Image (cartoon, rainbow, N blue to C red; front, top):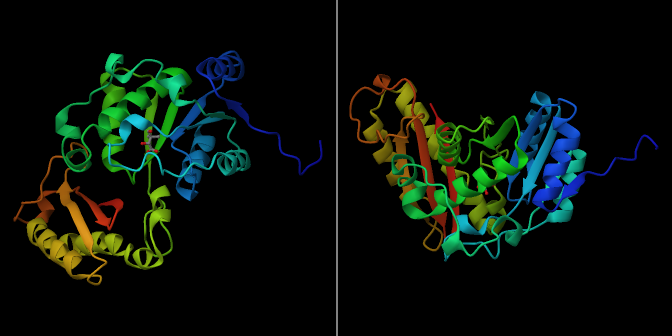
Length: 301
Ligand code: PAF
């Protein structure tokens, strides 16, 4: 084989193929397996997860599955970008060893009314994104639990951009005694601060120009609370007002939430009017829509 030729990646389309690969390539020869679950349309954010998985484990498996049960009835399941060829190419380039690409009927072989689900306690799932996307975290926890059972990796890697999702998955793995260690990695950003997301491609040119304001607002909160000693409550009030006034008539942010939380429990501390130093760790979380495009981000301070 010439130097330039790359070995093509193993694509498992069924659960049986994924299990066989795991047995042959990992279990029998005592290797460690890292796992990066995705919905495809891979970008540099996913790339950083695969790269870290490669650093920490002998072999890396990536799953690509647009999970219907984590989308609400009026959400973007149908139009979610599906770019399998490019994704397989990127996974090969980044040195992943296996890509699991099941069909919907392979993962959900029964009608949903007859299926089992994983429910993580409401204290983590009913607030923030959970309030605006009912059933979303049940869908995420269920599919990740299935994927963990199929892939049986030693470590799984998720982006901190979906901060609430990361805590929900950590809690599920802990409560259900998965042997897989759940690892969160920092958000990868565009040069102007916008958090990388497959949904960014829904943005029009004007929306894309305005979108980095989300990260600017989070950065302003960090400065006010940590450097200017402004109370969390006051800083959030200012940020919510600032977000309302940016943009033009037809292009305004529709804020779903902007809150300060405890980074481990997601307990909301937004109304704390006292000295912010009382909270050595805070995570600010935001979700806002630009017309129909929903953007989320967060910053730990
Ligand atoms: O973050 C995602 O891409 C998805 O929610 C996940 C974790 C792959 C589950 O479908």
